[in-house]
Structure formats: structure tokens, C-alpha cells
Image 1 (cartoon, rainbow, N blue to C red):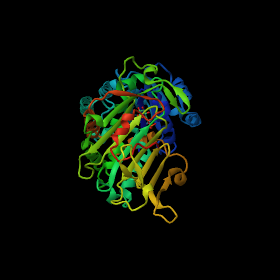
Image 2 (image 1 turned 180 degrees about the vertical axis):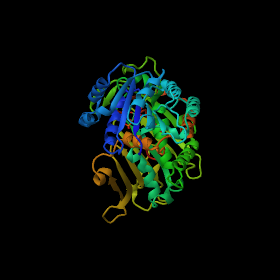
Image 3 (image 1 turned 30 degrees about the vertical axis):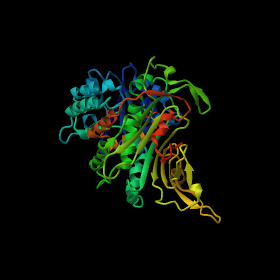
Image 4 (image 1 turned 45 degrees about the horizontal axis):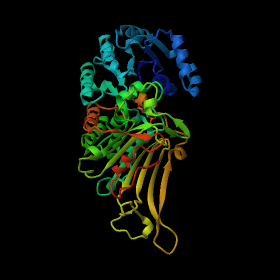
Length: 482
Ligand code: BG6
């Protein structure tokens, strides 16, 4: 990295700091050649020691010992990101490297504070990056705006204060190894590329299923956004972009992001009934009785916020025209899993015996799809390819078989947490895994265009409202259960 580094977390008392950011920094600290300093800024009056002690207590158990060796590099400043931040400048000057250090400002703030915080950082001279001066970068957490208009306004203000290459809009899904592998897998294996289009792919489905409901203390945030803005607009559209993008001509960040933007701009949700929204009622998840969304602490009476979304989308481009992309996300579903399933077309004629077909309720006989490529992103980290084999015996009866790869068999354990990679990239100034201004806006434009829908109840521990099953047509099959 070359020069000393100072990392500032604005909104350091929130749970993101202890749950994700500091564990990631601890892991990076062991690998960085330049020891970095961390300054937490929050409103409560605390000494450096009291902040360190509080942080230590909130860290995951397994990180506490490593924190003891790091604690002296952690500092605190009582401050309100919405007010004058000159004292922060003074504190940073006094730390090793002073004004000569590279500075990363992490905005772990409520969205309403993004702009005031940026303006105060700018007013305090903290963002200035004159020619030859050390770098200044800002990482902005989601939600980036509430709709296209607010995202545009936020982008405009940011760009009046910073250059685009100083702005790192984070989507933590892009930091996951298995998500990066969607890109790597597609563009480093030629065997799939000739098939990766509407001629050979019948349908793609993407699921992000959670067992969790709205966690304690989150209802205020969640009720204002809902499942569509919390997960679909950002994480799920990123998965879709990676699966559907054209090959970039190089690994340059702009080349890759250009292709993702092109996908997002071609996204269409064709009609009103191609989107289903739901909200969980009381039920049972993983053997535990759980309450309904409306009973969760902090959810306002009469809320109409959705906790489930299923969509049937299309991409209006040469490669994908006519191929449905089915997206589903919900809280309080029976099982936690994130998965992309690519369903290839059936052979043009069916030569094998009857077990290769199923009869639908309306009497239609459908051939089963033997060829599916399943990329399981979490908690299982696997890639599997389904195909049919002839069952031994005199007939020509096909049965399903699989080729499978599991990260843990090849690499051991779980892959590194997303924030670790993203913080490292932000420190190194690599924006590839962060969202560009036009990318965020294209995702909002697609989501804003989805017609409003009634919110249908589903019992916690079920797969969402039955209407979501009807997004599959005819013989296309149904939603994966992970
Ligand atoms: C966050 C959402 O961005 O992603 C949460 O705000 C959601 O509601 C979380 O639970 C899911 O992330 P992961 O990495 O656990 O799949």
C-alpha cells in the first residue's frame, strides 16, 4: 500500500462495526505491510479506552484475542456526522502519517445522514485530493437512495464533492467469493459459453431465501424499505447482472461495470402479475414458533411493507430475449439458501421411456429437464451440473445424475467474509466490486418500473404466497427448495 493508512468509521456505534467491519480489519491487519489506524466516530461521549472495551465486548468471541493486539491502533472521537467535523481533521493530523496518510471514510450511517456527512467532511477539508496528494476515499453503505430520483440526487451531490474514483458504493454480495465466481466461472470455462443464450437456456432462477425475520432493532429501517428495496434492487440484481452480462474485453473495472450496466438497462418486468409480494404471518421456522411481521417489535400498525418478492423478468437483448429470469427473495422461509439455477432446454425429441415426463394438473405431459447448472452461493458453496444417465436394465429409462464441486472439499472451510475483500479493495483503490453511479441508477430504474402489487400473507416457514408458483408457466417447472 506504500503510505500510512487511516480508516474512519462514521456511525461507529452501529452493529455493522463490531459484526462485520472490525473482524474484517483484524484479519487484514495481519496481512497489510503498513499498520493502519482506525478512528470510530459516534455521538456518545466515550474515551478511547471505553470505546475499545465496548467494541471488544461486541465482537464475535473468536475475534477478541486478535483485537487485544490491535486495540492500541483504535481511536475514538465523539462527533455527529451531521455537524462540523473539523475536530476529526485535527485528530487525523495527530495520528501517524498525519495529512500524508491515505484516508478511507466508511459511512456506516442512517441514509438521511449520508449527504450531511459528506458535506461536513468536504467543509472540513477532509476529502480534498489535490494532484500528488494522498488519496481520500469514501465507502457508502446501502441503501443508496430510495428510488431513481433520490439515487440521482445523491449521486449528483457526491459528484460535486468527489471524483467518481473516490466513491465506493458497497454491495456486500459482490465481496462473496461464490458471487465473484459467477463471473470467473462463466468467463474462464469455454464449455458453457456456446450454450449461454436463449437457444439453449430455457429459464434462469435466482433465490435468496432467509430463515431470519426482521431482526431486533431493524424494524424502523426495514419497514421503510421492504424486500424489494432491501434485497432485490441491489444484491439480487447484481447476481442477475453477473449471470447475464456479456463477456468484458478485459478485467478493467470500467469494462466489467459497463457490461453489468448494459444488462440492468435491458431489464423488463413485463406485466402486473409478473411480480408477487408477500408478508409473513406467525408460523414455524426450523422447529421454532415465530411471530408474524406485523407483531415484530417496532413495525408500525397498518404497515403494508413486503417481506417477500417474486418476479418474472426478461432481458430485452439479443442474447436473452424471451428467456424468463425468475427472482425470489423472502424472509422467514423454511430454509436459508442463495442459489442461481440455470435450466437448459430439453432435447428436441424425447427418445427415452416415460419416466422422463411428468403430468401437470391440467393434463399436460412435460418432459423433465435433465440439464441444470446450479451455483449454490450460501450456505453451501457448490457448483453442480445435472444430467441424465441410462438406468441399468433392458429399457431406455433415464435417471437424474450430477457432477458436483464443493468449495470446502477443494479449499477447506468457509470462504473469507465479504467485507474483508471489499475493505481491502477500497484500501487499494480497486472499484471493480463496487457500484458505479449509472449502475445504481439503472437498478433503481428497473425496480421503479415494477407495478405496485397487493401484499399477500404467507405463514412463516412456508415458501411464500402460492401466487409465486404461478410465475412458472406450463412445463417450466417450479422454484428450487435449495
Ligand atoms: C442485507 C439486508 O443487505 O443483506 C438484510 O439488509 C439481509 O435484510 C442481508 O438479511 C443478507 O445478507 P447475507 O450475506 O446474510 O445473505
